[in-house]
Image (cartoon, rainbow, N blue to C red; front, side):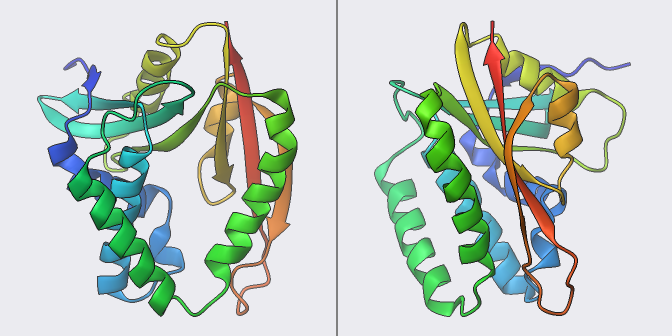
Length: 204
């Protein structure tokens, strides 16, 4: 079996990040327009890298197969630059201009409500973006990425937002605990609620 290598993420591979996240986080469930889906995924990938202090990639035969981004307090935003900041700023304005539904607002409001209470714990950082290639199974890519991130942290508390459309059980198996959860309805045609979670872990 070829060994997975974990190393610093190469920002030139953001297109693969967009692809992995679009599938793994099911962006396509709520965005039907193909162009809008591509554009949204690109801006989110750029934004999360911009806001991160740690970015790790998992590589199989020198091919990116997964990534994890995190923002740790008091660390430099080393992936932030003028071009990326401008791309994100313009992209978010366009998304807000053409996004006429309340799905994103409802989702963000639920997360912000949980975060407001959680910040009383004074966490040290957040996992901002995390996905793997859905075409590769049983390689432990997610586990290796998370362990590599945790090895960079000591006596620190991190948190992550996730939801029931994602594999939130993965985090629970890795020692994360549920701080809070909120059910929201994003699709008027589908009354099945989506559960938003705020999970956290104390790294020893």
